[in-house]
Image (cartoon, rainbow, N blue to C red):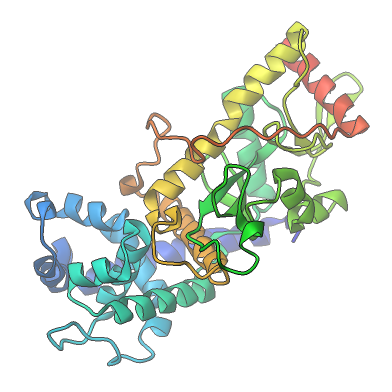
Length: 393
């Protein structure tokens, strides 16, 4: 969908955020201040080093989000998660509450532990962990999809101003990048080779457009690890929308007298150079203006690997260490983890620790940089205009 202009859409976005804050506050009140009976009871079912932490720190260590954000997630999925209110019980026979169910699902997603390990840690059968986690995924898809959408025109103007303020790139709308989600497949499985990437790991690719606040603006996943970054881009809805002018079609920016550039994304050398997707210069002996462009481009693009690294570090289920992931369900689980990532940022969650100063490992450690030599002639001129503009500043 193309960005929608106008005050009506901005008002709707503001109303959604206000409703989210109200829901989180209401849920927090219902559960009791300072943790309440549910959290006290859940803590008693868990053991280990967590017991010596402060209450808030312990909660955030387990769920990778604050209590306030957890309450909001519960409010989102309540109706779907409680359809069969008496279907799930602890091993001692006590029926799991809404909070218990959300807690089990989040532990499964962010710990990366097996069904048996997660079940043992909280006192439920491993089959119950599986059923609850999938129910949670379905509920999040149904109720939280609005947390991952393309920005409207007002939001995009703010994004562009941040990129220009920080790195001096005018009219930049985001960064596109991709990462491999490792899978545990058997070599005996039919068609397994299509999932075997260039580093000889079985994987599924996640492509994402990321804003300066580390929020996902657009994602596509489900493609096998054998596909190159540019092939996935070309197959995506993002590519089709941008090529026909239905996205990145906002106001142009004058960079010199009689010279202007439209909205664009930036990406690494693994992507083609397009009028709406600018990649770094790759040749040797660059002019000073081109060196300056590459310098600014490299600094701005770091938000993507940092985001993907933090994302995969939080949702360890995506490390491929779990039992035989269903490759037909995995794209939906990846999508829900992206929704949760955005919710944490949207509620300005201190527990998320999405701090520019944090040092994280590369999201695709030991993966060699792919290089795409495809370059659109118009894009070459656009990039040259920008490099000359930056050199004069």
